[in-house]
Amino acid sequence: MSDQLSSELKSLRIARDEKLPRPKPWKQLRWVAAGGGALALLLLVAVPAVKRVIFKTQVETTEVIAASPARATVQLSASGYVVPQRVSKVGAKITGRIAKVYVREGDAVKEGQLLAELEDAQERSNIAVAQANVRAAEAQLSEIAQQTERQKLLAAEGITARATVEDLEARRASLEATHDAAKAEVDVLRTTLSYMKIVSPLSGVVISKPAEPGMLVGVMAADLAEVADLSSLMVEVDVPERRISQVVVGNPCEIVLDAYPAKRLRCRVHEVGRKVDRSKATVTVKAAFLEIPPEALPDMSARVSFLTQELPPELMNKPDELLVPKSAVVGEGDEAAVFVIREGKARRENIAIDEDRGDYYRLARGPLPGTRIVNNPPAGMADGHPIKEKQP
Image (cartoon, rainbow, N blue to C red; front, side):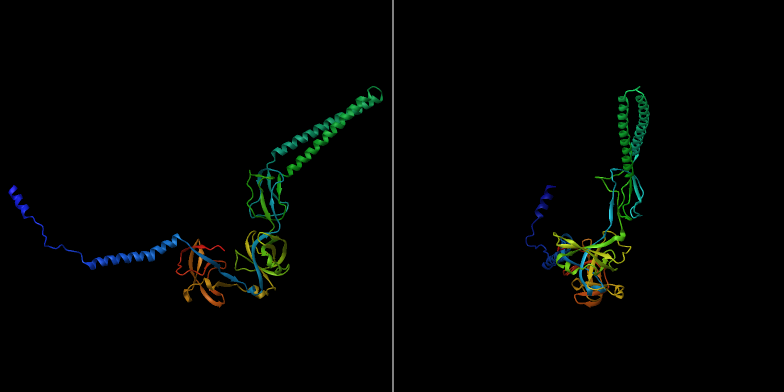
């Protein structure tokens, strides 16, 4: 066994002259090139995509405009809100808890209409006690009056001393004062009880959710509800101080509610404020609707255009033109589009250009008026690009 092992060991030797197979250079270069290409693709595609997600692009914004036929006569425009000129936050004259509520938000009410009642059990009990005190005082007065008359007769005959009569008259006067005080207390308590009924101070509409039964209302507490006279709606706007000379009471104007941008409403300048807001350097101007539309609601955003002359009726019925700044348009022809801003992203939306209007295009089809869009979109912007609006 050992001889066989020894023989096998002797047969083992290192083949120093034989060359081992080596990989071919062109195959190595192929793998290097493939890896480099993949890395380049990652840098060109994946990295910018990641950057777009992590780092939002700052952009300027503009908006789609609804151009009114009155634009040639517009000398000034300002934004503001629809405000009722007659409005009341209805509360209770005394503090108490609500027992019943008779109206809901949106209900029309008349002046003096009962809106709610407060818990009044204690007040009614107090009135009952005060009325009992009045009756007791009246009974005592009747008794004293009889005693006084009897003693006067006895005193006249010399049977009773005059001092007794004087004491009874003094006691009668005291009881009369007590009786008067008890009656006055009843009147006060009845007045307080009347305050338990909360009525509307004006005719209008309940524009807030009324307080619920059990809630505390009154002095230093919550209000019951807010009632506004919708027939007194006006639009209040802030006009820059330096341009207030262009606004004249009685001049025509045009209102566009942000909620209904396609509808133009005629108005007149009703009032120019007599005080300047120093912090904003503006003056409040009130524009009165010629016909208050049913869709107008308190606190709606609105825009008022002050006109140099009355707009003819035929132009009032002419639809607005849809305009978009040329600087916001990308592509041409059927590929023309704008980037609409939605939830922090730029969404590409195709448009149909109808006519060139200088710095604007008139659109046959496009986003709704007032839609915010990207101005001067950066090269390479794509649909869904995360953005951040530049601060003015």
